Length: 505
Image 1 (cartoon, one colour):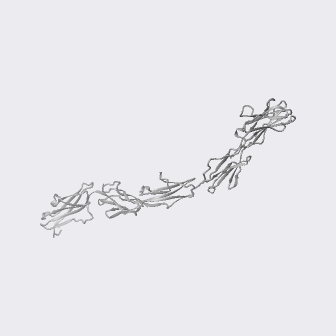
Image 2 (image 1 turned 60 degrees about the vertical axis):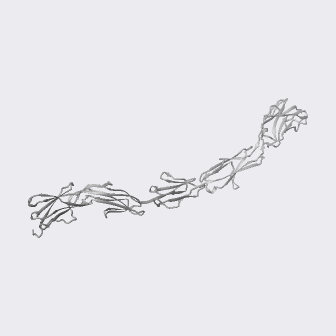
Image 3 (image 1 turned 135 degrees about the vertical axis):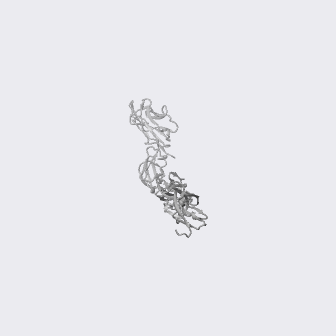
């Protein structure tokens, strides 16, 4: 059961009326709840006193109780309420006594008794000072501020105030493992470290007057970490396009457990320690950062290297990806751009001829300062890496050129025919576009057109021919062929000689 007391505070001033003076006092400094407590009214210079002594309680109108003193006779004149006892004390049985005492006993002190009390003489209208009776109480309960101390981050400080309602004021002390650490109501912990987690701090509140005390405890929780962040694989992590991959992030020494996030560029992945990527595409390559967070934040980054097969992104002639036509002697650039990881082995070919070869590259280039007619054809780029076999694309180059003798074919200037026989005059040229062959007979200093002879063309090669039948003596002589294709340069004019077989020139 909680124990309460009252405090009775006395004022020392005394009123003197008709020679008598009154003072009021208490049986102790504090009244204990439900325990007897005595208030005493002392009348000085009270010889031959004939008057009524009255006790007053501030919360009541009129006297609380009164006693009658008639010389040597004293009696209770007006009984107090139930629970209170008034009585005549020392000196009241002698008329000559100059000091007479009258008592009011509160049989069981109650909260309602905590008020002002005084006494007076009814006839003499002399009054005592006032005493204030107060409850001595506590501690009934203890509170902490903050209410629930902690958790505290490692390295920070914590201040806890212990408080209780007490009258008179209680004393305070803090202990840890029964060892005193603070003699006041205030507990200050600085630069807290993880070794203090689980410490039980006890505040003891003591009412020394009542010899009572109460205690209250709290257990310190220290949050700390992470000390480090580790990944289950090294960086860079190399994978192939289309693969699945998972990376685990683990923080050491986290209390409570750390929270995790993964970040790729500005994209925040779901908050968990394992990063899972399925059917990885090349766009997923880059830096992934795991962040472990508790009282502090630590990061760990891994670079994802996504490898993929070669693909030709561009194959151009003079920056054009379709059929390209140029005049001869024009500068031409063949360029192939490849997207791949790792880099590709790239070949630039004309038919089976390798023009340029690059290793572990993403680009290859071949240049002609002056394109010739024989450069007409299809050009191919082949590219491949360790992920998959090579891929290829082709582009066509057409070089316009005027006719000229085909140096790859032996030139035959003279032809022989048996009289009455047949003979075919023939010439091989290079030209683009396909030329026309116009034949002339220059015999007897006359230029007679014979018409257009046959033309067989392969790429830029062309063969012009004309067949003479039943050759006679008059057919012997000089023949001229004019080769024309409308190209910017001049036509090709070639003279051929025909003679009879067996004849010496």
